[in-house]
Image (cartoon, rainbow, N blue to C red; front, side, top):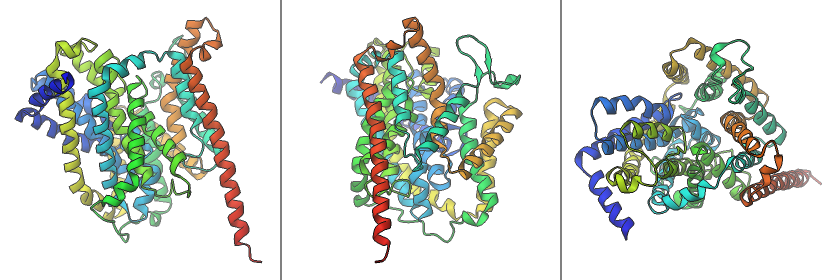
Length: 507
């Protein structure tokens, strides 16, 4: 009852005309920011913080504006992923695996509409979880130490087999390449430069946004240059603009499972929406890929990661509000905003600033509904992007990507770096080596190394700390289980292929 009373008070704050306007502006700007390769929610929120201060917004209104932009960017990231095979941000990487094949089959509008519904369900369920379970889940997250986080990230890599390719060796090579790239920069413990070759711009490491845009956007452009006729959508139907209840029912299980996994991933500080999207997709692929349809345009392959990354976005607010620990890069920026407004996140935040906390939570419900109402009517407009001639569309997208990357640090070196990643992505795709494991290795490598070093520092170099708690035992058991399932599914797939080949041989 106390929660309901607090939520009612939050709605009284969020539903004021001014705060509704802030939520609408945040949703609209966020959708555009998420759709543009190279920006993403973190940069979008960071760009709008000075605007919030310049306008003199009260704390509740400023947080509503930026949190709505955060949710809007998570929605918007799917647009270029589905239409152009270019992720708008990191969590949208997984959406490309089945979203782009759906667009190639003439189902772009269906994929966009389905992803909007999945995003709405994932974000709404995570907001319900934030409302009901924030203090409890924060206490559980406290028990994750360095050893537990290292085991969690190993589990993420153990689930790599079968993502975007049937060759687990190539997935492993791609993951190791991503881990190697993540070590470039200054050693966080000793301060010694690693693999920088005397280039001072590399001392801070590789910017993940630059790598992401280069690997996907620039490599896609290079493939277009090589074979312009392969990317011609104008003669393909755009599909139904309206999504049917049958489509939703078919993917509802994927949405619910993705929402649960994504929310838990978001609650874990440092894991964020990228891990939530990845785990949601891999789990759904294990559960639902009986007919080998994933990676070829299965709607559940769109619904699961979209629900997962939006649920993780809400889950990441739990440790930020209750512990003062950011759950993702975007919540780290929001945390900086709160501190600059002399508001200290933590267990006492709910008592000291109820208008800020409960106004934010209520505004998230409103923003989710706004985003669904805004995005579904726009599906047809987004899908008609494919009617633009590729010789206009692709150079335009790449130009936007380069401008977005340059706007981050105003560095010519970043433009050279994005071109280098584009060439790397082109070569890897030519060799049929998937890009997703490279992205995951680059994303998690630094966090993984930091947690391993912290664990070994705590134990004085004793490796047994990695299996010293029930949580680590459970996570390592899941690692073994995932590896065993990978072998089992690969053997079963090979056996099924042999049976089909034998059945096709005439007597």
